[in-house]
Image (cartoon, rainbow, N blue to C red):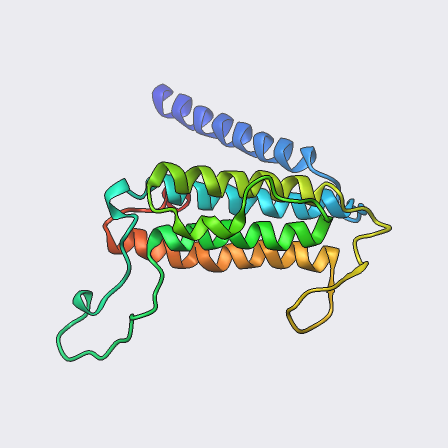
Length: 198
């Protein structure tokens, strides 16, 4: 009986510690109703997709960077079309190239690499480095956002009205779109994406 009470007390104590830890995490961020700086708010979203996508790219084995879905993975007779589907490496380099495009437009900063050469990369180490570099550039660009300029209209060749802030948010959304595709590529190769394994 005494051991049972000790076990119950330990579980209650553990539950209290977990609740306190969660409260501490919640308390470390801004309080609800606080007005956040545009750069801080958007940078936090960029950090989420950077963490998930970099984990996915590092998890794919080097010999699978040329993998793309094909008719061969479907049941016979099921009609599919994969002629123009990107390989795993092309998914990652496309995001890297797009990051430079979006975030140079957000900030006016010039990339320190030639984004046009990124689609030619095929080796894992090169692709990982290029993607990481593009996220570092994106963080620098987002840091230029202020309450005064976040909704300044920028000119793009794409249709629609774009502002510095909405373009930064679109860059995050674009990366999430391709991350979702890359997750499927990992799973087709028997790999659990690191963000899903947590």
